[in-house]
Image 1 (spheres, rainbow, N blue to C red):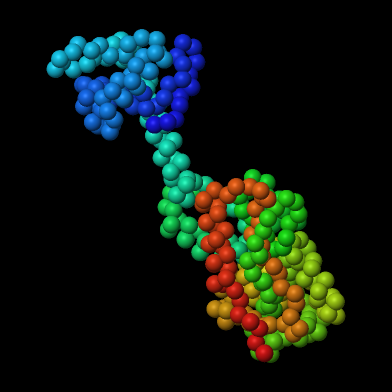
Image 2: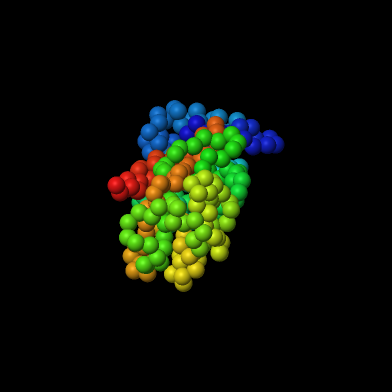
Length: 311
């Protein structure tokens, strides 16, 4: 081994391979058998022990000669007892590094509810299938001014400020979700929404942009209730309080198409879609697991891209 253990006091720098040679000799009873086990020549093992003895300031083996096995000296017993603990820690470190380079380890991902429902399950499943020992931790918040902070990756519906890099994952078109029978089947003209009762998200994230686009088209719905929780909004639609304009990911994540009480309508003209991005700190060296997470997220988002609007 080429790693060094740096110690203090009378003991100078000791190489791990010196401790490994000492342990092999103690277990095999001779320098020759230890050399065969380690794949060294006997002279190389002797040189390693000589270097170790210089470092600790005394002999670690009694060498009786002939067929009799070598024995640890009192100093050797002390050195080997602590040396084995050092070797075990070094082996654990090497194993952890190998697992990290193979894609294990931990990543922290910031997300929000529709991505958590639709994109992340496939991303996490694939990462766990490829790297069963990985640790994936999610933080689901939707602040007005998101920050990467200590996160490795951050999903957000739009670009964020600061020294960040990003990949755009998909355009997420807005759809009208209404109670069955509220509107005729098929697309709904935006002017039909002017003055109509609606439930909506709070004025955070991309919501103000969507409502401004509505207003520019001459549609000013009557917002009767706001909630950041998609299921709550859909419950209000079922209760007849009004319709909701939700992005496709939120509609898919809530499995709205399977609910006979609700209808999904495209808008005419269509509103500008919400844009979903994946961000990370600029200049940060990704762990293999984080780099793979970016690749998988791009692949999953491409497979989930919403169908084009109907004519």
